[in-house]
Length: 263
Image 1: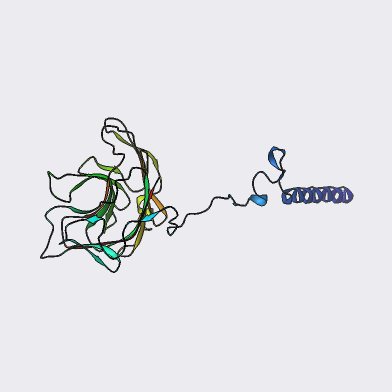
Image 2 (image 1 turned 180 degrees about the horizontal axis):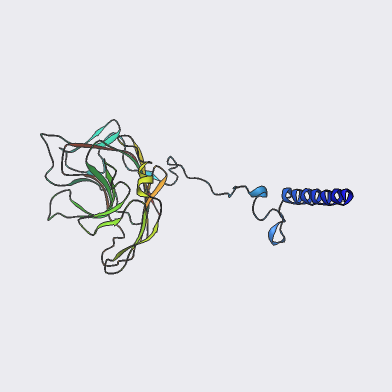
């Protein structure tokens, strides 16, 4: 009986050793070609390169950091300070309505926009594919907005100024159907989880991608919202870029390092 137990134990140990050796061997190449297939050992060497916020390959800087050349806004509200476009209202000079500084250099359709912003109060936003409403007032825009607010309730979402309102909340991928019906296609991450990536009162890096009817907002390297606008009657395929100063209590917003790439 002892001899049988010894033989059984020896065979079991040998079997385990054989499996361990096989597990350590590289997987066989797929497709009959050497070097194809996944990396040995389950590694994550995918060959996909990470994009950094400072990668401006193919981009054009549309703010020179010194003047408002190419930009048009209320001179009582907007100025250049410390290499940033600054919008500020005070207790003595409060806004009666939302106002915008507008980039006059182009009206891009498919593009990427990268910039940094800092907000100390209230609300702001980056307009794109927008149009002017001179009948409403000077420096008034209607269109898509990458929303920004100091409480970070709305930061990262897609809002349509003077239009359809909320199109995608932070953490959502949405589709807008013909006729204007909005629906959530997928949840990207929880809005509160994404809120943790926002630097309150500090500089944040915003990246907007507009390609066809797909609109993407990325903040500090995190995907905040994405919208597929399938409503041909209401969607915009090109237009103006601008920055918002929001009506309300005194506020200050700053924009710098503004880069545009046409796609």
